[in-house]
Figure 1 (cartoon, helix red, strand yellow):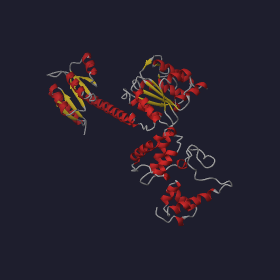
Figure 2: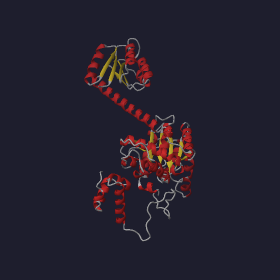
Figure 3: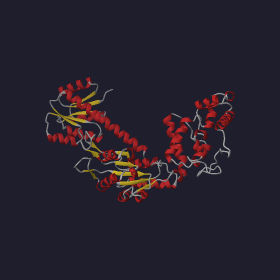
Figure 4: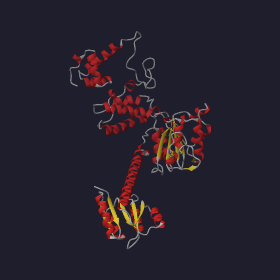
Length: 472
Protein backbone atom coordinates (compact mmCIF):
# COMPACT_ATOMS: atom_id res chain seq x y z
CA UNK A 1 0.00 0.00 0.00
CA UNK A 2 1.42 3.35 -1.09
CA UNK A 3 2.06 6.42 1.03
CA UNK A 4 -0.93 8.60 1.92
CA UNK A 5 -0.84 12.10 0.37
CA UNK A 6 -3.19 14.90 1.39
CA UNK A 7 -3.86 17.40 -1.43
CA UNK A 8 -5.09 20.77 -0.14
CA UNK A 9 -6.23 23.21 -2.83
CA UNK A 10 -9.41 25.22 -3.40
CA UNK A 11 -9.33 24.59 -7.17
CA UNK A 12 -11.22 21.39 -7.99
CA UNK A 13 -9.38 20.86 -11.29
CA UNK A 14 -5.99 21.08 -9.54
CA UNK A 15 -7.09 18.52 -6.94
CA UNK A 16 -8.43 16.21 -9.65
CA UNK A 17 -5.29 16.34 -11.80
CA UNK A 18 -3.03 15.76 -8.81
CA UNK A 19 -5.17 12.85 -7.59
CA UNK A 20 -5.07 11.18 -11.02
CA UNK A 21 -1.29 11.47 -11.28
CA UNK A 22 -0.58 10.46 -7.68
CA UNK A 23 -2.90 7.44 -7.71
CA UNK A 24 -1.41 6.30 -11.00
CA UNK A 25 2.02 6.51 -9.29
CA UNK A 26 0.74 4.25 -6.50
CA UNK A 27 -0.11 6.74 -3.76
CA UNK A 28 -3.29 6.94 -1.70
CA UNK A 29 -4.85 10.39 -1.97
CA UNK A 30 -7.13 12.45 0.28
CA UNK A 31 -8.47 15.87 -0.71
CA UNK A 32 -9.31 19.10 1.11
CA UNK A 33 -10.64 22.32 -0.41
CA UNK A 34 -10.06 24.62 2.57
CA UNK A 35 -7.93 25.08 5.66
CA UNK A 36 -10.77 23.78 7.83
CA UNK A 37 -11.15 20.60 5.73
CA UNK A 38 -7.39 20.10 5.78
CA UNK A 39 -7.27 20.37 9.57
CA UNK A 40 -10.14 17.89 9.89
CA UNK A 41 -8.42 15.44 7.50
CA UNK A 42 -5.16 15.67 9.48
CA UNK A 43 -7.05 15.09 12.73
CA UNK A 44 -8.74 11.97 11.28
CA UNK A 45 -5.55 10.37 9.97
CA UNK A 46 -2.04 11.77 9.79
CA UNK A 47 -0.88 11.74 6.15
CA UNK A 48 2.61 10.79 5.00
CA UNK A 49 2.91 14.00 2.96
CA UNK A 50 0.87 17.17 2.34
CA UNK A 51 0.64 19.11 -0.93
CA UNK A 52 -0.57 22.44 0.44
CA UNK A 53 -1.85 25.48 -1.47
CA UNK A 54 -0.49 28.74 -0.06
CA UNK A 55 -3.74 30.67 -0.51
CA UNK A 56 -6.99 29.06 0.71
CA UNK A 57 -10.50 30.58 0.84
CA UNK A 58 -10.75 30.59 4.65
CA UNK A 59 -7.10 30.96 5.71
CA UNK A 60 -3.50 30.59 4.51
CA UNK A 61 -1.61 27.39 3.99
CA UNK A 62 0.85 28.61 6.63
CA UNK A 63 -1.85 28.27 9.27
CA UNK A 64 -2.42 24.66 8.24
CA UNK A 65 1.35 24.07 8.25
CA UNK A 66 1.74 25.50 11.76
CA UNK A 67 -1.14 23.38 13.02
CA UNK A 68 0.39 20.26 11.47
CA UNK A 69 3.75 20.98 13.10
CA UNK A 70 2.08 20.96 16.52
CA UNK A 71 0.98 17.37 15.79
CA UNK A 72 4.05 16.13 13.91
CA UNK A 73 7.40 17.59 12.95
CA UNK A 74 8.15 14.74 10.56
CA UNK A 75 5.39 14.92 7.92
CA UNK A 76 6.89 16.65 4.84
CA UNK A 77 4.92 19.52 3.34
CA UNK A 78 5.27 20.83 -0.21
CA UNK A 79 3.76 24.29 -0.68
CA UNK A 80 1.89 25.14 -3.91
CA UNK A 81 1.17 28.72 -4.87
CA UNK A 82 0.19 30.95 -7.73
CA UNK A 83 1.53 33.87 -5.71
CA UNK A 84 5.21 33.01 -5.72
CA UNK A 85 7.33 35.31 -3.65
CA UNK A 86 10.66 35.09 -1.89
CA UNK A 87 9.02 36.20 1.35
CA UNK A 88 6.43 33.45 1.24
CA UNK A 89 9.01 30.82 0.35
CA UNK A 90 11.32 31.83 3.19
CA UNK A 91 8.46 31.94 5.69
CA UNK A 92 7.17 28.49 4.66
CA UNK A 93 10.70 27.07 4.90
CA UNK A 94 11.12 28.52 8.38
CA UNK A 95 7.87 26.88 9.40
CA UNK A 96 9.21 23.51 8.21
CA UNK A 97 8.06 23.16 4.59
CA UNK A 98 10.17 20.68 2.62
CA UNK A 99 9.88 22.47 -0.73
CA UNK A 100 7.97 25.16 -2.62
CA UNK A 101 6.43 24.84 -6.14
CA UNK A 102 4.86 27.62 -8.17
CA UNK A 103 1.70 27.31 -10.25
CA UNK A 104 1.36 26.41 -13.01
CA UNK A 105 3.50 23.35 -12.32
CA UNK A 106 4.45 20.29 -14.32
CA UNK A 107 2.95 17.06 -12.99
CA UNK A 108 6.30 15.30 -13.42
CA UNK A 109 7.93 17.98 -11.28
CA UNK A 110 5.34 17.42 -8.55
CA UNK A 111 5.82 13.63 -8.64
CA UNK A 112 9.60 13.98 -8.43
CA UNK A 113 9.31 16.39 -5.50
CA UNK A 114 6.86 14.10 -3.68
CA UNK A 115 9.16 11.10 -4.18
CA UNK A 116 12.20 13.04 -2.91
CA UNK A 117 10.28 14.39 0.09
CA UNK A 118 8.99 10.93 1.10
CA UNK A 119 12.45 9.37 0.70
CA UNK A 120 14.00 12.13 2.84
CA UNK A 121 11.25 11.58 5.42
CA UNK A 122 11.87 7.83 5.40
CA UNK A 123 15.59 8.34 5.94
CA UNK A 124 14.94 10.79 8.80
CA UNK A 125 12.57 8.28 10.39
CA UNK A 126 15.17 5.52 10.07
CA UNK A 127 17.91 7.69 11.59
CA UNK A 128 15.57 8.72 14.43
CA UNK A 129 14.62 5.08 15.03
CA UNK A 130 18.25 4.00 15.13
CA UNK A 131 19.16 6.80 17.52
CA UNK A 132 16.26 5.96 19.81
CA UNK A 133 17.31 2.30 19.73
CA UNK A 134 20.89 3.32 20.52
CA UNK A 135 19.71 5.42 23.44
CA UNK A 136 17.88 2.42 24.89
CA UNK A 137 20.82 0.10 24.22
CA UNK A 138 23.51 2.36 25.65
CA UNK A 139 21.54 3.79 28.56
CA UNK A 140 23.41 4.06 31.86
CA UNK A 141 20.70 1.81 33.33
CA UNK A 142 22.08 -1.01 31.17
CA UNK A 143 25.57 -0.79 32.64
CA UNK A 144 26.18 -3.68 35.03
CA UNK A 145 27.72 -2.34 38.22
CA UNK A 146 27.41 -4.66 41.21
CA UNK A 147 30.90 -3.79 42.46
CA UNK A 148 31.62 -0.61 44.39
CA UNK A 149 34.31 0.30 41.84
CA UNK A 150 31.89 0.20 38.90
CA UNK A 151 29.16 1.94 40.87
CA UNK A 152 31.57 4.85 41.28
CA UNK A 153 32.23 4.83 37.53
CA UNK A 154 28.49 4.83 36.74
CA UNK A 155 27.87 7.69 39.18
CA UNK A 156 30.66 9.70 37.52
CA UNK A 157 29.38 8.93 34.01
CA UNK A 158 25.88 10.09 34.96
CA UNK A 159 27.20 13.41 36.31
CA UNK A 160 29.48 14.04 33.32
CA UNK A 161 26.79 13.15 30.76
CA UNK A 162 24.48 15.80 32.24
CA UNK A 163 27.24 18.42 32.34
CA UNK A 164 28.64 20.76 29.71
CA UNK A 165 32.01 18.96 29.70
CA UNK A 166 33.48 18.97 26.20
CA UNK A 167 36.64 16.89 26.72
CA UNK A 168 36.67 13.55 28.53
CA UNK A 169 39.40 10.91 28.86
CA UNK A 170 38.56 7.23 29.46
CA UNK A 171 41.38 5.05 30.76
CA UNK A 172 41.51 1.29 31.17
CA UNK A 173 42.93 -1.97 29.92
CA UNK A 174 41.91 -3.37 26.57
CA UNK A 175 38.47 -4.95 26.71
CA UNK A 176 37.14 -3.25 29.87
CA UNK A 177 34.33 -1.48 28.01
CA UNK A 178 35.67 1.99 27.20
CA UNK A 179 33.53 2.17 24.06
CA UNK A 180 30.40 1.31 26.03
CA UNK A 181 31.13 4.08 28.53
CA UNK A 182 31.74 6.54 25.68
CA UNK A 183 28.34 5.75 24.18
CA UNK A 184 26.64 6.01 27.56
CA UNK A 185 28.14 9.48 27.97
CA UNK A 186 26.71 10.53 24.60
CA UNK A 187 23.28 8.92 24.74
CA UNK A 188 22.62 10.07 28.33
CA UNK A 189 23.48 13.65 27.40
CA UNK A 190 21.16 16.41 26.19
CA UNK A 191 22.53 16.08 22.61
CA UNK A 192 21.81 12.36 22.26
CA UNK A 193 19.89 12.96 19.02
CA UNK A 194 23.01 14.48 17.45
CA UNK A 195 25.65 12.32 15.73
CA UNK A 196 28.00 9.98 17.59
CA UNK A 197 31.15 9.44 15.52
CA UNK A 198 33.66 6.74 16.47
CA UNK A 199 37.13 6.25 15.05
CA UNK A 200 39.94 3.94 16.14
CA UNK A 201 43.09 6.00 15.74
CA UNK A 202 45.28 2.99 14.96
CA UNK A 203 43.05 1.86 12.09
CA UNK A 204 44.43 4.40 9.61
CA UNK A 205 47.85 5.79 8.68
CA UNK A 206 48.57 9.32 9.89
CA UNK A 207 47.77 11.13 6.64
CA UNK A 208 44.42 9.40 6.24
CA UNK A 209 43.58 9.83 9.93
CA UNK A 210 44.08 13.59 9.66
CA UNK A 211 41.78 13.69 6.65
CA UNK A 212 39.16 11.57 8.45
CA UNK A 213 39.15 13.93 11.42
CA UNK A 214 39.47 17.33 9.73
CA UNK A 215 38.31 16.61 6.19
CA UNK A 216 40.08 17.83 3.07
CA UNK A 217 39.60 20.18 0.13
CA UNK A 218 39.59 19.03 -3.45
CA UNK A 219 43.16 18.68 -4.72
CA UNK A 220 44.68 18.75 -1.22
CA UNK A 221 46.61 15.60 -2.12
CA UNK A 222 46.85 13.15 -5.01
CA UNK A 223 43.65 11.19 -4.39
CA UNK A 224 41.58 14.14 -3.10
CA UNK A 225 39.29 14.41 -6.12
CA UNK A 226 36.40 15.92 -4.15
CA UNK A 227 35.92 17.98 -1.03
CA UNK A 228 35.30 15.85 2.05
CA UNK A 229 33.95 16.80 5.47
CA UNK A 230 35.74 15.25 8.43
CA UNK A 231 34.28 13.68 11.56
CA UNK A 232 34.58 16.88 13.59
CA UNK A 233 32.46 18.71 11.04
CA UNK A 234 29.95 15.90 10.54
CA UNK A 235 29.49 15.50 14.31
CA UNK A 236 28.76 19.20 14.95
CA UNK A 237 26.50 19.35 18.00
CA UNK A 238 27.28 15.73 18.93
CA UNK A 239 30.22 13.58 19.99
CA UNK A 240 33.45 12.28 18.48
CA UNK A 241 34.97 9.24 20.20
CA UNK A 242 38.72 8.92 19.58
CA UNK A 243 39.69 5.40 20.61
CA UNK A 244 43.36 4.50 21.16
CA UNK A 245 44.34 8.17 21.35
CA UNK A 246 47.67 7.20 22.89
CA UNK A 247 48.90 5.85 19.55
CA UNK A 248 48.62 8.94 17.32
CA UNK A 249 51.75 10.71 16.08
CA UNK A 250 53.25 13.77 17.77
CA UNK A 251 52.47 15.89 14.69
CA UNK A 252 48.79 15.00 14.77
CA UNK A 253 48.74 15.45 18.55
CA UNK A 254 49.70 19.10 18.01
CA UNK A 255 46.84 19.66 15.54
CA UNK A 256 44.39 17.94 17.86
CA UNK A 257 45.52 20.14 20.76
CA UNK A 258 44.87 23.30 18.73
CA UNK A 259 41.41 22.02 17.88
CA UNK A 260 40.59 21.15 21.50
CA UNK A 261 41.59 24.64 22.64
CA UNK A 262 39.35 26.58 20.25
CA UNK A 263 37.09 24.05 18.47
CA UNK A 264 38.29 25.64 15.24
CA UNK A 265 40.08 23.80 12.42
CA UNK A 266 40.82 23.89 8.73
CA UNK A 267 40.31 21.05 6.31
CA UNK A 268 43.50 19.59 4.89
CA UNK A 269 44.48 21.94 2.08
CA UNK A 270 41.93 24.52 3.21
CA UNK A 271 42.29 28.21 4.06
CA UNK A 272 38.98 28.82 5.83
CA UNK A 273 38.49 28.36 9.57
CA UNK A 274 35.58 26.09 10.49
CA UNK A 275 34.09 26.29 13.97
CA UNK A 276 32.12 23.40 15.48
CA UNK A 277 30.62 22.46 18.82
CA UNK A 278 31.49 18.85 19.60
CA UNK A 279 32.18 16.78 22.70
CA UNK A 280 35.46 14.91 22.42
CA UNK A 281 35.78 11.60 24.24
CA UNK A 282 39.25 10.07 24.04
CA UNK A 283 40.21 6.60 25.26
CA UNK A 284 43.41 4.65 25.65
CA UNK A 285 44.76 1.52 27.29
CA UNK A 286 48.18 3.12 27.65
CA UNK A 287 49.68 4.84 30.69
CA UNK A 288 49.74 8.35 29.21
CA UNK A 289 51.84 9.76 32.06
CA UNK A 290 54.53 7.20 31.21
CA UNK A 291 54.15 7.97 27.50
CA UNK A 292 54.72 11.66 28.28
CA UNK A 293 57.89 10.87 30.22
CA UNK A 294 59.09 8.72 27.31
CA UNK A 295 58.51 11.60 24.89
CA UNK A 296 55.84 9.76 22.90
CA UNK A 297 52.91 11.90 24.01
CA UNK A 298 52.66 15.68 24.34
CA UNK A 299 52.50 16.87 27.92
CA UNK A 300 50.18 19.80 27.06
CA UNK A 301 47.74 17.49 25.22
CA UNK A 302 47.82 15.05 28.12
CA UNK A 303 46.81 17.72 30.62
CA UNK A 304 44.19 19.07 28.20
CA UNK A 305 42.62 15.62 27.85
CA UNK A 306 42.68 14.62 31.51
CA UNK A 307 40.52 17.48 32.78
CA UNK A 308 37.83 14.87 33.42
CA UNK A 309 39.32 11.36 33.50
CA UNK A 310 37.25 8.21 33.93
CA UNK A 311 39.26 5.14 34.91
CA UNK A 312 37.58 1.78 34.38
CA UNK A 313 39.01 -0.97 36.61
CA UNK A 314 39.90 -4.35 35.07
CA UNK A 315 37.42 -7.17 35.51
CA UNK A 316 39.71 -9.07 37.93
CA UNK A 317 39.39 -6.14 40.36
CA UNK A 318 35.59 -6.17 40.32
CA UNK A 319 34.72 -9.82 40.67
CA UNK A 320 31.18 -8.99 41.83
CA UNK A 321 30.43 -7.95 38.23
CA UNK A 322 31.65 -11.16 36.57
CA UNK A 323 28.62 -13.43 36.96
CA UNK A 324 26.02 -10.67 36.37
CA UNK A 325 27.88 -9.81 33.15
CA UNK A 326 28.08 -13.48 32.16
CA UNK A 327 24.34 -13.98 32.71
CA UNK A 328 23.54 -10.85 30.71
CA UNK A 329 25.61 -12.24 27.83
CA UNK A 330 23.75 -15.56 28.07
CA UNK A 331 20.45 -13.69 27.64
CA UNK A 332 21.87 -11.67 24.76
CA UNK A 333 23.23 -14.67 22.86
CA UNK A 334 20.13 -16.74 23.60
CA UNK A 335 18.21 -14.16 21.59
CA UNK A 336 20.86 -13.74 18.90
CA UNK A 337 21.56 -17.44 18.39
CA UNK A 338 17.96 -18.60 18.98
CA UNK A 339 18.89 -20.71 21.98
CA UNK A 340 17.03 -21.12 25.28
CA UNK A 341 19.70 -21.84 27.85
CA UNK A 342 18.62 -21.38 31.45
CA UNK A 343 21.77 -19.67 32.69
CA UNK A 344 25.05 -21.16 34.00
CA UNK A 345 25.41 -24.16 36.30
CA UNK A 346 27.20 -23.93 39.65
CA UNK A 347 30.50 -25.53 38.60
CA UNK A 348 30.81 -23.39 35.45
CA UNK A 349 29.91 -20.29 37.49
CA UNK A 350 32.68 -21.13 39.95
CA UNK A 351 35.21 -21.49 37.14
CA UNK A 352 34.06 -18.24 35.52
CA UNK A 353 34.33 -16.30 38.76
CA UNK A 354 37.78 -17.74 39.62
CA UNK A 355 39.32 -17.00 36.22
CA UNK A 356 41.47 -13.82 36.10
CA UNK A 357 40.07 -12.57 32.74
CA UNK A 358 43.18 -10.94 31.25
CA UNK A 359 41.05 -9.93 28.25
CA UNK A 360 38.45 -8.35 30.56
CA UNK A 361 34.80 -7.98 29.54
CA UNK A 362 35.55 -8.62 25.86
CA UNK A 363 37.08 -12.01 26.69
CA UNK A 364 34.13 -12.88 28.93
CA UNK A 365 31.68 -11.96 26.19
CA UNK A 366 33.51 -14.10 23.64
CA UNK A 367 33.67 -17.05 26.05
CA UNK A 368 29.92 -16.90 26.76
CA UNK A 369 29.11 -16.58 23.05
CA UNK A 370 31.15 -19.74 22.41
CA UNK A 371 29.50 -21.56 25.32
CA UNK A 372 25.97 -20.64 24.23
CA UNK A 373 26.73 -21.68 20.67
CA UNK A 374 28.23 -25.06 21.60
CA UNK A 375 26.10 -26.07 24.57
CA UNK A 376 23.42 -28.68 23.98
CA UNK A 377 22.28 -28.85 27.60
CA UNK A 378 19.77 -26.79 29.54
CA UNK A 379 22.49 -24.68 31.16
CA UNK A 380 26.07 -23.76 30.37
CA UNK A 381 28.33 -26.35 31.99
CA UNK A 382 32.03 -26.52 32.67
CA UNK A 383 32.65 -28.52 29.50
CA UNK A 384 31.18 -25.67 27.43
CA UNK A 385 33.87 -23.25 28.59
CA UNK A 386 37.21 -22.71 26.84
CA UNK A 387 39.99 -24.88 28.23
CA UNK A 388 41.93 -21.97 29.74
CA UNK A 389 38.91 -21.08 31.88
CA UNK A 390 38.43 -24.68 32.99
CA UNK A 391 42.12 -24.86 33.94
CA UNK A 392 42.08 -21.30 35.27
CA UNK A 393 45.41 -20.14 33.81
CA UNK A 394 44.22 -16.94 32.14
CA UNK A 395 46.46 -17.68 29.19
CA UNK A 396 49.51 -18.22 31.46
CA UNK A 397 51.40 -21.40 32.31
CA UNK A 398 50.46 -22.89 35.67
CA UNK A 399 52.70 -21.86 38.53
CA UNK A 400 55.19 -24.35 39.94
CA UNK A 401 53.38 -26.92 42.03
CA UNK A 402 50.35 -27.01 39.75
CA UNK A 403 48.47 -23.90 40.94
CA UNK A 404 47.44 -21.46 38.22
CA UNK A 405 48.74 -17.94 38.82
CA UNK A 406 46.11 -15.58 40.19
CA UNK A 407 43.27 -18.08 40.22
CA UNK A 408 43.91 -20.62 42.99
CA UNK A 409 42.67 -23.38 40.67
CA UNK A 410 44.75 -26.56 40.52
CA UNK A 411 45.90 -27.46 36.99
CA UNK A 412 44.56 -30.95 36.18
CA UNK A 413 47.68 -32.28 34.45
CA UNK A 414 51.35 -32.23 35.40
CA UNK A 415 54.10 -33.23 32.98
CA UNK A 416 56.19 -36.04 34.51
CA UNK A 417 59.94 -35.39 34.82
CA UNK A 418 60.67 -37.97 32.14
CA UNK A 419 58.08 -36.57 29.72
CA UNK A 420 55.26 -38.41 27.93
CA UNK A 421 54.27 -39.72 24.51
CA UNK A 422 51.56 -37.22 23.60
CA UNK A 423 49.54 -39.61 21.39
CA UNK A 424 49.38 -42.14 24.23
CA UNK A 425 48.03 -39.44 26.58
CA UNK A 426 45.48 -38.37 23.94
CA UNK A 427 44.37 -41.98 23.38
CA UNK A 428 44.02 -42.61 27.11
CA UNK A 429 42.00 -39.41 27.70
CA UNK A 430 39.72 -40.32 24.78
CA UNK A 431 39.23 -43.82 26.22
CA UNK A 432 38.39 -42.37 29.67
CA UNK A 433 35.91 -39.90 28.17
CA UNK A 434 34.12 -42.62 26.17
CA UNK A 435 33.92 -44.92 29.20
CA UNK A 436 32.56 -42.12 31.41
CA UNK A 437 30.03 -41.17 28.71
CA UNK A 438 29.00 -44.85 28.27
CA UNK A 439 29.97 -44.66 24.61
CA UNK A 440 27.96 -41.50 23.90
CA UNK A 441 30.15 -39.53 21.48
CA UNK A 442 28.44 -36.19 22.08
CA UNK A 443 28.93 -36.36 25.86
CA UNK A 444 32.50 -37.60 25.44
CA UNK A 445 33.24 -34.70 23.07
CA UNK A 446 31.92 -32.24 25.66
CA UNK A 447 34.13 -33.77 28.34
CA UNK A 448 37.15 -33.18 26.10
CA UNK A 449 36.05 -29.74 24.86
CA UNK A 450 35.88 -30.77 21.20
CA UNK A 451 33.08 -31.23 18.68
CA UNK A 452 31.61 -34.48 17.35
CA UNK A 453 33.49 -34.36 14.05
CA UNK A 454 36.82 -34.12 15.88
CA UNK A 455 35.97 -36.95 18.26
CA UNK A 456 34.87 -39.19 15.36
CA UNK A 457 38.25 -38.59 13.73
CA UNK A 458 40.11 -39.50 16.93
CA UNK A 459 37.98 -42.62 17.54
CA UNK A 460 38.93 -43.87 14.09
CA UNK A 461 42.56 -42.78 14.54
CA UNK A 462 42.99 -44.73 17.78
CA UNK A 463 40.68 -47.63 16.76
CA UNK A 464 38.31 -47.16 19.73
CA UNK A 465 35.09 -47.89 17.83
CA UNK A 466 34.22 -50.67 20.25
CA UNK A 467 34.02 -48.10 23.09
CA UNK A 468 31.91 -45.72 21.01
CA UNK A 469 28.99 -48.02 20.42
CA UNK A 470 26.53 -45.84 22.33
CA UNK A 471 24.13 -43.30 20.82
CA UNK A 472 25.24 -39.92 19.53
